[in-house]
Structure formats: structure tokens, C-alpha cells
Amino acid sequence: MKGALLGPLVILALIVIVSAGGILLEFVFLYPLFMSFLWMVGGVYYYFHWERHGVRSLDPPVIDNPPLVSILIPCFNETVNAAETIAAAIGQNYPNFEVIAIDDGSSDTTGAVLDRLTLAYPALRVVHFAKNQGKAMALRMGALVARGEYLVCIDGDAVLDPNATAYIVRLFINTPRVGAVTGNPRIRTRSTLLGKVQVGEFSSIIGLIKRAQRIYGTINTVSGVIAGFRRSALHHCGYWSLDMITEDIDISWMLQADHWSIQYEPDALCWILMPETFAGLWKQRLRWAQGGAEVFLKQIPHMFAWNRRRMWGVLLEYCLSLAWAGALIMTFILWMVGNFITMPAGMNVQSIQPPAFWGLLLATTCLLQFAVALFIESRYEPKLYRLIFWVIWYPFFFWILTLATSLAGFPKALLRLRGKRAVWISPDRGVTSSVRR
Image (cartoon, rainbow, N blue to C red; front, side, top):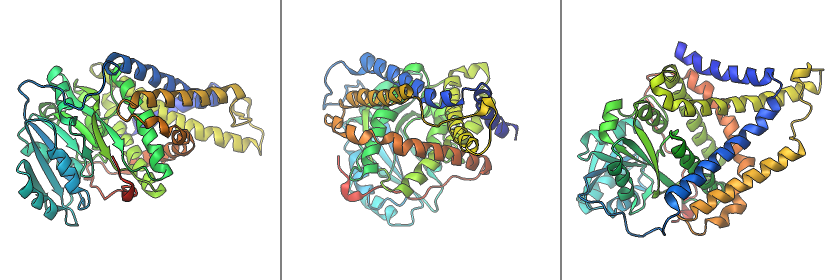
């Protein structure tokens, strides 16, 4: 119980400090500005240090004595997508691998589809669950039956780039302390405004943040749709937790708290489906927000130990992000109340509009971040710059969405019973007629 209360108290203390100092409005506008420059500096350094040399090759990296790799694919109600996903996994430009599909108690014909695919692909093995156990349990079972030390985990509707496995394994071999490698998800549902904005989001926000976090030392989370793991590292920290609804965030914190490092491999591409309806997007982002809060509440009682100081940056960023969401709401409330009653000088918010200079600076910084990120990501999609018109709508839709889901997800995480198995349901996968690579 003390652990569950510690997280909210830390965040509340940050909001009170900001409010008491009379800098509430300044924090609301300056925090995104500061983080944007932090991400750009880290992302640009990463690009010049690792990415800019040479032209991307269509051939995979050469690996001497390539070790056996197990590609794990948890599936739940993937009748429509299973064949394409398995075919892409089988088509890896890597000489030594196996593919393990885990049918997690699907209620459709996924199990039968997977069994038929074993006749066409000898490298494919299928594990069947009698009922839905959740993605974490599916990954656990896949890891237990896998024969390889290195695991590449993708979703049941994802399409793996032919060279992705080789790029991931290369990092494991080069650095023994690497416990996980997060890949580079690419959106393939692009027919609607939401789809196109998410393409820009994954390129100019998520990709840039992962590059920056890799430079600063700690990555908040691997990509759940494409990640590689060292099985011995998983075994040492206890594998994926069964009661976390975002097992990818949880395993990332567990590995790094156990002194394993996580690296980002932008050449490990994976083409994914994303929601293209507001309802589907809300459910997805609420799950992300709730899952992040669950991991935060689980880990924060242990994070102040000196031997876990590597995680303090991620912990501080999460606390400040939630404090920013709370400060934004508090600013709006104080402004509304101030229209009807006289507020004390330290709590009076005369306007929620930023000063002209701040507004111009925020807009310029936002466009600069988009331009920098799309320039870097154009290495992987040469015509990505065409999406700049759609990306500029990101703040209008997704800042509000992030704010709302952060505030709604934290109470849900507090109220959810620990130990309850986290199972999944079929998500919104966009307008499938628009899927392309």
C-alpha cells in the first residue's frame, strides 16, 4: 500500500511546488519546449554518431557463425493477418532461425490457420493455449520452448523487414551487456488523417525520443511490436510480468534495473497496423497510459536505491510528464474560477494563452523538431517528408489525447488489482484496405 501511495505523492508534490512558486503557467509552456530540445539534441547526436555514414544496404549485416534465433509471434484472433506475418518472419535474410507462433486461445480460426502454415514452413512451430492467457504468458511460453538464446518478438499482425533479425542479433553479439534491442516500427495504415498523423508521430516523436534516450543512457520502453531479447537476461530478471497490461514497459524497466542495457536499432524495421478511429485510438492510448502508471507504481518503491540510479532519469521524466498534465488541468481550472471570483495573487491565472513570444517559440520549436526527425527518418522511407503537412496537426490531436489518457489512466492503475492476469482483446487495426508497405 505504501508503494501505491508513494507515486501519487511524488507527482502531487511536484504540482504543489510549481503552483506555490507562482510558475504554473511557465511550467506548462516551458516543459514541452525543454523536452523538445532535449530530444532533438540527443537524436541529432545519435544520427551523426551512428546513422549518417554510408547508404542503407539492401543486404543484411554479415555475422560470423550466426547463432540460432527464435522469432516469437503471440497471436490472438489473427485469422486475417497470420499468414502474412508468418510469411514475413520465414522470409528473414538470416541463415539460422526458427519461428514459434503462440495461439493464445483465439476465438476465431487462428489456430487452424497456423496449423496449416506448418505444412508449408518447416521452420514454424505452433503452441496452442486452451484459453486466453495474455500476451505476457504467450511470450513466456514461447521463450520456454525456444531453442535460441536470442529472441525476436513481434505482434501477430506485424510484418518483419527481411533484414530486421540480422540487425538485432548484431547488437547482442557486439555488446554482451545488451539485454534487449528495440526495433523501428513503421505505420502501414495511412488512408485517414489519424493514420497519417501517427506515421509522423512514430517518426518525429517516438523515433526521436528513442534515439535521445539511447544517448542519455536509459530507454523508457522497447517497442512491443518489434523487440529482441537475450533469453539469459530475461531469465535473470524473471521474464514478463503476467499482471502488467503493458508488458513491454514493465520488462524494459526490469531489465535496466537489473543492470542490463537496452539499445535502439533503427534498421530493424517492422510494418505495423494502428487504429484509425477515435474510439480505437482512445482505447490504445488509455491502455498505454494505464500500463505506464502500473509499472511506475510497481517500480517506484525500489527506484531510490543507489544501485538503480541509472533509472532515475526515466523516473524523473515520467513524474514531470504527469505533473505537466496535472499542471495544465490546474491552470485551466484556476483560469475558469478566476473569471467568477477574485483569486489570491499567487493563484491568479489571467489568461491561458501563452505570451506572443512563447507561442511563436513553441510553434517554431515544434516545426523544427518535426523537420529534424523526418530528415533522419527519411533514411528509412525516402519520401517521408511529404507527411510534414499531416504531422503539424499532431499537437492539436495528440497532446489533448495524451493529457486525457494520462489523467484517466493513472486512477485506473491505482484501482486495478495487482496479481490479476492481464489478457488482451483484438484492437482496432485501421482501415485494412489502405494497408501498404
